[in-house]
Amino acid sequence: EQIVPRAVFVHIKDTVGMAPNHRFVLPGDGPVDFRAYVRNLVELHYRGPVVVEVSVDVFDQPGNDPVKAAEHVWERVSPAFA
Image 1 (cartoon, one colour):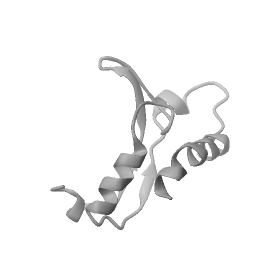
Image 2 (cartoon, one colour):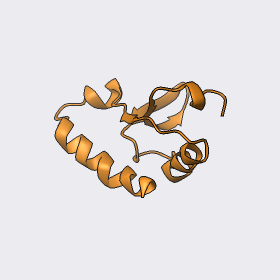
Image 3 (spheres, helix red, strand yellow):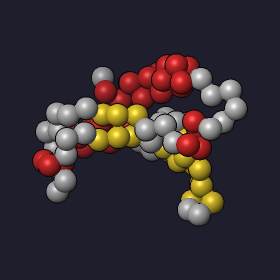
Image 4 (cartoon, helix red, strand yellow):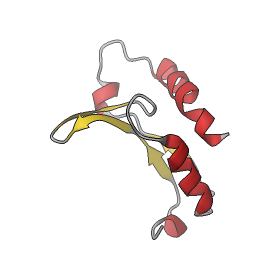
């Protein structure tokens, strides 16, 4: 609530496991409730961009395809913005 009026953008990512035994995953592949996240942004009148953060835990995986990753995140997370 306190930072949203000053935020110029927000980023989303997801994680599996608990620190220190965790790894970052693409948004929508972990337990983050993006519907609740987006609902909070709307209630706080946030109007800036929402940027997907792709962690090195994902980016450095053999065979990582950034286009497929973007499509995957869109399929998983975009319903939260509807």
